[in-house]
Image 1 (cartoon, rainbow, N blue to C red):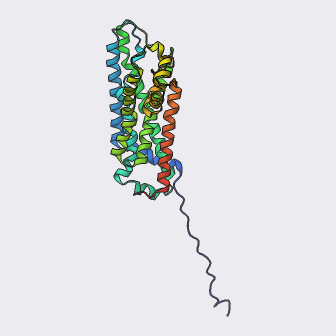
Image 2: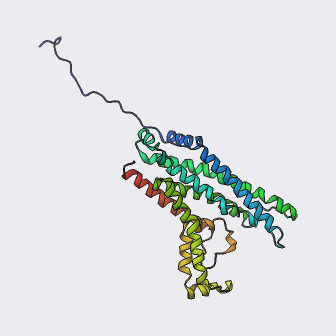
Image 3: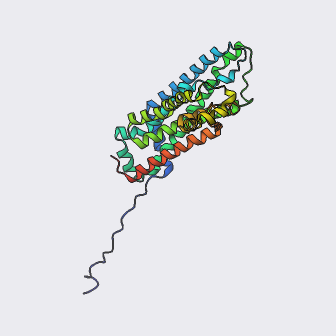
Length: 294
């Protein structure tokens, strides 16, 4: 066979490889999806307004007390203001599973964990801005009460800087907890109910359960009461809940612990809340990676 008639060599055809999106592009995409929805903005706006309004009313009510200190009311608005970060997190965590948009997301980004990491980062940044605005609004809400008593608003004295920092971290931590539970359960209503139970309802139930154990004992004898009545177990359980731990983050370090509970302080409460966030995020990542998404 001559060279002219020899069949050409057919090697293995090169298959083009498509590079997946980079992590910064995934983060940018998740941030765009988050900020393009109206629900996060409405949640943030309501949270800021409600937090400031409750702080204002609490400060005005307390301003008639002889020993009134304006900064003592700065965190009172979180009583209802804590619901906003929880709602934000749950809506983002379970939102794509509720609408079915996760199919498109995971088609474009087959590796699922970068999507979860990008969503976590987007929620963190958005919740941080919301928490800073809510904290600033709470500070401004103290001005009328402080002015009515001609008292200075000392934001850098004593435990106040730590309380303000704790308020910001409080909002971010609750948003991440709601997000991780939403991503884990993948259903908005069950995730919302679970979040509200473990953060709001369970601490109240445990506090009520600990009251009969205290038996109206004098706070000066709480140490002996804890040993005899056995409130330490209930106190530890209360401090170990996400809601109980989060509340410790906004309590002045010099205030001491609630009767019957361990003295974890703001740092200890923050670590407990962080442990809950990490645990639920890891569980959501394991489920996302090991089970089919339907």
